[in-house]
Image (tube, rainbow, N blue to C red; front, side, top):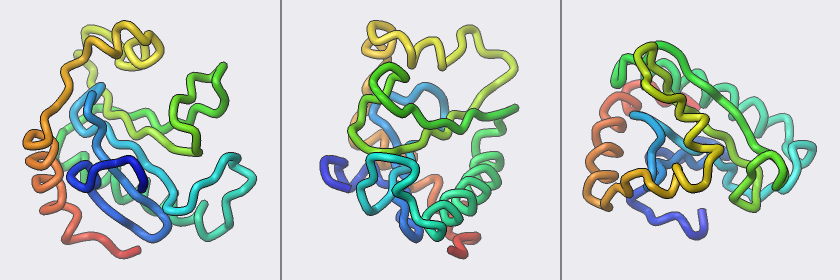
Length: 142
């Protein structure tokens, strides 16, 4: 994907790029974008939609082994009023934990709080990407 450094890309799965953000809201927070730029959900093909759901299942199963989360949010912000910051359709996979002190969604929806999050170094992101790939390597079937 243009604009995303190679080290942030965790996986490239049919029709999709899955990457770590520099400011993760939680352990295992991933962004999912299509390899082809789409502005609207109605622009997605049936194959792209199917690939997205298969990738979601794959991500859920593998991240559960790595991060031991209690739940997750899977969502898409469409339009400026909904908080969309990237000018293309993309999805968030956000791990959740029962003992959270503050909801990561409250941070995401507060620009000032989000900007205060630690920015991971390329080395920190690369380390997490390598860690995850060990789990995903065994199960990628798309």
